[in-house]
Length: 199
Image (cartoon, rainbow, N blue to C red; front, side, top):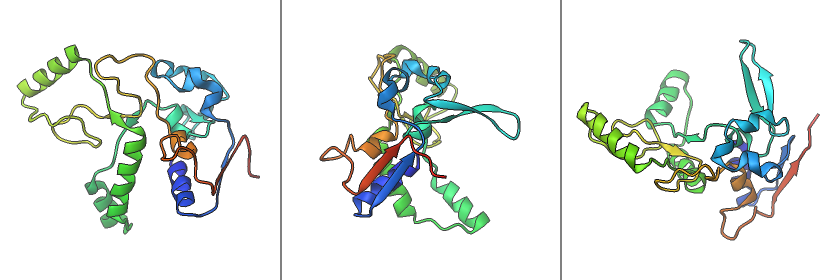
């Protein structure tokens, strides 16, 4: 999934980019990859995900679609804090352009992330209970682990207080296919091949 924003950005800058995916695209399996109600079910479809046994003997799944893990994960959207990048720099000597990191986060967030919906009857009780326990002040939804926030962001559509089972999943293929771009569509220098393997 992370390669898609990179491919799109390079193509947008005028670079010729070939994006190769061994699997298909979500539109071939809309019922299992678009709505939140299908979360978990898609793992049974071998065209969407494959079982993998890790070296530690854990059974997990890897996606087989253009949008990578964003088509099969739980939809939680999290951004690392500045402290994380500071730690990587101090511990391992890694160098990051923090302005570019923040601009990248903002661009992806604007395309596919929204605050998670909370039904009114639960949200008021949750916030009230936590503030009574001195978890305050409540600062609202946050894209990172933030003191005072108990509501994160998600790649599932936020329909307010309804929490419909048909809420749409904004997976990273939206970025590659340019569904939210102005004008819509991928850059002309981005070529996408699905159901291909490189040997």
